[in-house]
Length: 591
Ligand code: GDP
Image 1: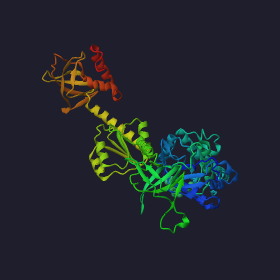
Image 2: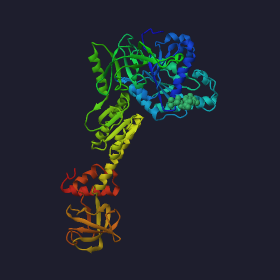
Image 3: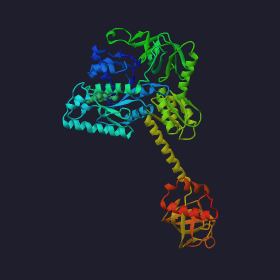
Image 4: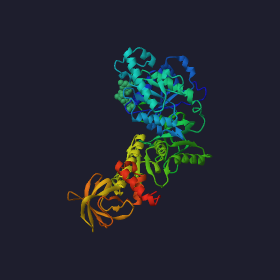
């Protein structure tokens, strides 16, 4: 071991869109290392696989590289996807030290590709982009397990050109996302540029290059992060809470600092008070050769970071995925409990004030969601780990503002009684397993609600209207006066008050008729018969008079300040003239 600087193994997470080859890539990285057993076998952890530096150097084909590398190997998280990445959080950051973003070079970017990039950007995690499935490029001749440069050289000119074209589409997309990127062997400064490695996870072409870039990133960015003390108290993150036959609730934990021993007192985050318990057993997967044993696990007495381990202990039922686990001593137990509690409280929200409700399956995904909604300045009433319960449904329904009477669920179930309740209520429920889709869906919902509200205003607001009494069309003098009118601008409608140009209100429109039919309103250009209650022809009004709808002051304000842009040109003109008439005597009218 060149554990010269006492650095721990960096933790690597594979991310990217579904079906783009994350699992295949992980299998390939692990598989090839197993085959080359002589050069240092991989170690299977719980939830992770450790590929030792010797196996990696062996793949790179240059033993001289051995002394360059300062870490003992790479620890790959077995569960691919940004979900594992966000679950594996540590205070204020991501637990994974490095990431691989896999993108199918033939399909290009998809929703979860974007999401992976967003998450990595937020956590400032160094990563490499893998442009996968190059073997699918038409005419590609596969060269099993060769480094990229070697296999590329063996392809025809056309095939090379095709790869470059597709690669630059990926690079262009990365650019659009705010990342300067290049084919990794053209990157001169990894501090300024992302490396993109073309690979085939199936044939293994380009895999050595991926490992090399990861080690390169480690040397460049992580030396300080990876300093650790093997003798210090163990610190880790709960990857999963799992029921195991004969053991009850167990925790799959990624340990990232110090040592964890059988019998240690540990403190673990839960929904309520942190759990304090003693480690009964530390379990690792049984070696393949020992498969004849009943149990899948073998016991070990201690584990040192970085490692994945299963913990069996009493009272683990309420533990939260994504929460911290820390070894405590008798002396510092209270301090550690407080520390774990404050870490959980940093993520959970329970304000009771107006805002949306968020439920997520792990602390990490909850943290990511809260971050995204806060970025959009969306108020949050409650954010909690767990399924959507009847209580959540009721709580959301008490929020009056439809914009916030919303339940967001990430990777959680809706309890049947909550579902029944929600069906009858006006609460908006948005669930998804893609974080940024939830944010987008919420934005869409807000927009719809705003449009709806605007439409409602539209329907109730009295709108401007201007009309002229036509000559020779006085059908009745008074009680009510009935006259023929032409609408010159805007709209006239029944029950609206009628105003003269000098501002005097002379009556109310009692009815409108067109071709002998009663109609509620008439738009610009229409000629209709109008009954005006309160006015007498020859006294207040006469033929050829131009009259206005008297828009109430409150409505005029809404028209001018809130929905002016959605008015038609003739309505705008009519409103402008109407306001001018009103403001002749009172410059502050409707201001
Ligand atoms: P994941 O959902 O991202 O984990 O994707 P998988 O690893 O399950 O891969 C999805 C499909 O793509 C499977 O059928 C794989 O065999 C296939 N696949 C993955 N990588 C490659 C590759 O490099 N070349 C080819 N031809 N197929 C691949």
